[in-house]
Length: 405
RNA sequence: GUGAGUGUAGCUCAGUUGGUUAGAGCAUCGGGUUGUGGUUCCGAGGGUCGUGGGUUCGAUUCCCAUCAUUCACCCCA
Image 1 (cartoon, rainbow, N blue to C red):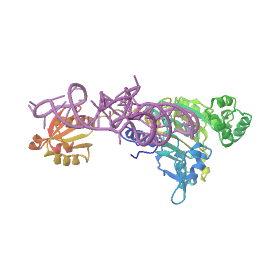
Image 2: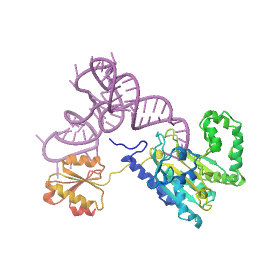
Image 3: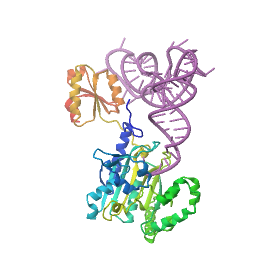
Image 4: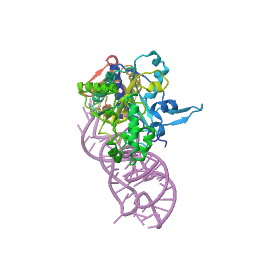
């Protein structure tokens, strides 16, 4: 038997319904905030991710589905959504037009990792990106929108917040941190590697021994430039105004290299070790990294699979019609009837002659609201028997009456 | 990439201290005399006990390998 590849799952039945429900309602909320849908290709040039996400990140370093296509191009399946949207923004020359743009997207992402709870090789993200809106209020708006989405679905969360600074305050801080790390030989091998490639990521290390050492490390939050510091204060004030609960986590470092200033992460305690349900932040230099004109950006992405099991679905109601025949003569007639009904009604047809009892059972199981049956009696009088499965009311009506309902 | 756990019916799982026809619940299908569901009662079908090898008179059970899967590390959404 051929089965799906490791870490790749089919989406069907209950799950596909949840997926559609989730994506539709997220889209609705995003549109209210002025975002419009964008869809970018799943396959992109590998260089796009190397230059945006960063070669020092694990995502690019060891998790990409990368290969050479038949035209000898170095390509890969997108491991995240932001890079593609930024590329599209630049390609459309929106950077030169200096226009504000807000996009939302959703779809599959691919990372070659060892699967576990909440971590698939093909997974889905819903995300948004807002370009050319440097105002800190946009940061707040995006966090408020994310909060609204999670609350809509009844999902509990905790919000962690940090500022990663800008080109004015980050470089001196980084130097500061590297100097601190040089004197620490007890840190783990991973951290020693990070010290050279991407020093701020050591703060994120899960190793307890390292964390004990970093308790004394300098924090960027204490070394922000006046602008960043002021904006961060503003952001906190707005969130306080809107009763958003958050905790400041000065060691929150996003795993993608392009972030600066505002960085945030929504986490859940209810879904296992992979607890990050959404993450995002500002990336004011990314458009330039990808050869665009200076354009600020901010966005977030949510892991749909991680959220799916937390979603409280509205309970499904009975809907539609079930059509069945009670005698052989009615089989063709019921097929014609069902075909007409399907112009404007949800209709399931049973192709076999069955007892009334069997049809009612089927109709009930399929959660239909009405059960329509045709038997000898109905054929004689040229009518249909219909029963409302909720009210139990039943009557005979003509085809025209049914089709006109 | 590292570690641990699990593979028995469509699903959830029992079970065999190694022995002849491997069980249950749910699901499916049929029936409980005339055409009435979601709650009942009766019955039926469905398994080469993940795959390959080894030990043994005999393996679904013990051993090894392999594949799949789950969880955790790591990483991140």
